[in-house]
Amino acid sequence: MVTLYGIKNCSTVKKAITWLDEHGVEFQFHDFRKDGLPPELLAEWVAELGWEKLINRAGMTFRRLDASQKENLNEEKAVSLMLAAPTLIRRPVLVTSSVTLGFKPDLYEALFKNT
Image 1 (cartoon, rainbow, N blue to C red):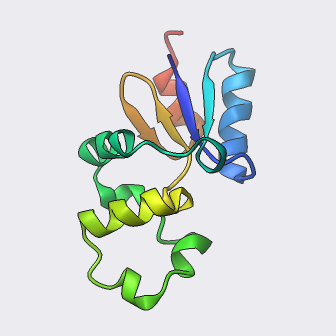
Image 2: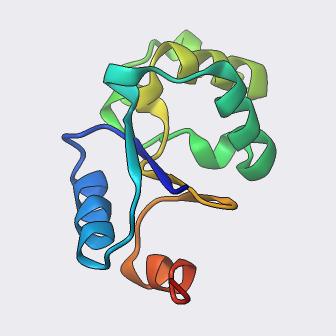
């Protein structure tokens, strides 16, 4: 099963959803805001991708954090912040047999070339 994680109003998530729909890929959408994020799932992503890739330092949520929250950021602190505010996670997160972060048409094309 293919699951796409993100938030509905994110433009990059919308592009990913459109691409998947247009290419006939069946998927389930999981909205961080509405559906939450289980800590075990985030732990799996951190193990596979690393917390540094997962946290979106360019997003508004990160920019709005207090300086003390951004200082000395490490895995434990980053995971805690991402669980408290899942919009800190770079989007979308596509879970197939592996975890893919972000959306680029050529990346998705390569992932689904045999489907």
